[in-house]
Length: 258
Image (cartoon, rainbow, N blue to C red; front, side, top):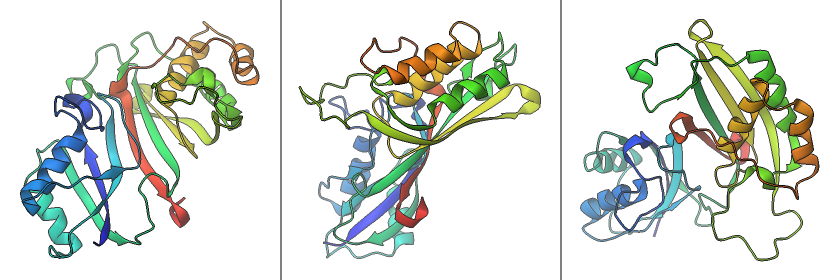
């Protein structure tokens, strides 16, 4: 059974995250329904990871082992699946990979983007696309806060519990390396794009990093307090989690693509 790697984009506003749901409203559910329509048989897929309800993706990756009897070119696979998918989900790219490749375990990193809009009035075109902060966010203070995250740290205070953590996690369970945590400014200063490039992210981690950095930037926490949360990971988790609507999975990195 040939193994194929698929890259897809989706508008997460109407979906309950990537992961398959009992109600059938996960993006994975819809993609697997499209496979069933093409193959006339069920097929399970494996993704690079989950995204929460309301989170968007420019380039989520998943792999599938397709039947030998259903040989199609990558272009035909893309067209066939898109014909059975709603317009909020699109297959962008299809490529053959080795049998040993795994969309999750072969990934060496991910890039996320988070959008904040500081305009007095939120454009309807940014509804469910950005966190609306009309009081403003001091950019330089935000940039300083984000730089605290760069490097290798124990991020347990910036990760929500999903329920599948080991009872006694290994020493490096919460260790992650953030290669870049930055912010760029667009639209006359009213749109902030935060970029996070790391070797891996835990459940709700990016949203908690953003929410806590926002507290620092707006003067409700100090950079020293933020550093202390990384230096003393046994303390209370952050209570500040940015809304899902502003978060985008921008890229999954494999091997040389990192």
